[in-house]
Image 1 (cartoon, helix red, strand yellow):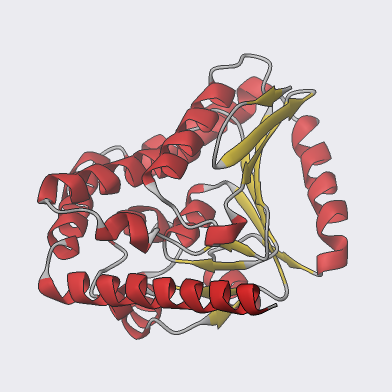
Image 2 (spheres, rainbow, N blue to C red):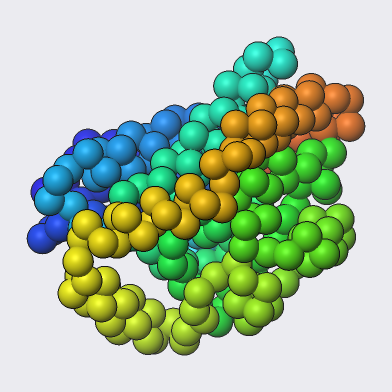
Length: 269
């Protein structure tokens, strides 16, 4: 079965839903529409009593470039920044609280909010070529929204180093730090994913749902609400600060200039 969306694809077959990020021309950057459609897709699967698993994969050579800065550059009020942040938080929370296992399979680079998707999922794969980065401080922001999810998998000490330096790190490091579950060669991606899916499908559905709920409840129930309010407010405040506004505007302008140069080259050809 195929569902109609603009920025993603959602298909289902024999209880396995596949959500594919489908904005390769924008490096699967997360704009408001894409976040909303992803949340809708996760909820669509979660509400189906026959669903057993959800796989998140992607088109293009980048899994996710993080927040869509063109979208964010259009935010002119704190409320608009809060809206974006809350949409993203709700997406990650829907992935984490999905009643059955969510598996991410990425064969391209992962930045910012994309790492939040990895962290919110139960099981995640990266191919050996992938690079990752918490790049937010480079544009005057912080990984506020995703921090609630990342810090459940990464130690506070390691998070400080990665988030403050905003350095790129490779798939093996991501595995060592606990961000992902497996690192595999590109040619073995499908084989390894199929093996995990078969293992999960052989387990008892209600037991897996109860197991997920147990882990979520015991580890987070006391502070999740406070973290949501703090992290989304921080995002919105920084988005409108001069440092972030200037950096984002500069990025968008450079993007427009690159697009103009490419169009000129095409006309010359």
